[in-house]
Length: 189
Image (cartoon, rainbow, N blue to C red; front, side, top):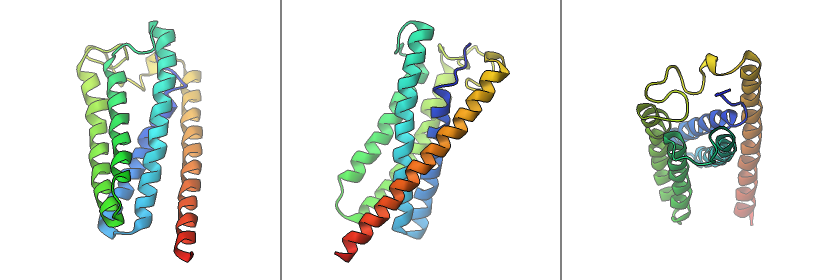
């Protein structure tokens, strides 16, 4: 069974959260509304956590499938680079005290980070030999090839995608609300 059902939902969730994050970043740049920045950073945070969890669970799967948790596979390396790019986003945010400057520069960097997902996760790994399906010389989409797993496993994977995504949305909205409450208390004090 080449397609797995326990780390793939994490990657789908990661992409969903990074997409929502970049939408809020663009929205912030056009509206200058600090709540848009709050949503952007929290969805980026959840996406990064999902990316880390996807990498960890993928390493467990790789150890079982290929005999080593890290093989230097282009998809593994691309995932690590993508996560590091988003971790740099949080370092950049934390390095600035001026809120307007922090929000503006963070939004621009968020757009850059999202744009870097495509070459690191989707383009370069497909152009080189890979242990994952879908690399150079392989057929089909690397994550959705119906010949890689049974219909039962595929349906279970989609249930996992929905469940993990809903859990991530719930966690993110709790963090957003906590930030609003904390900000309100600081402004009233």
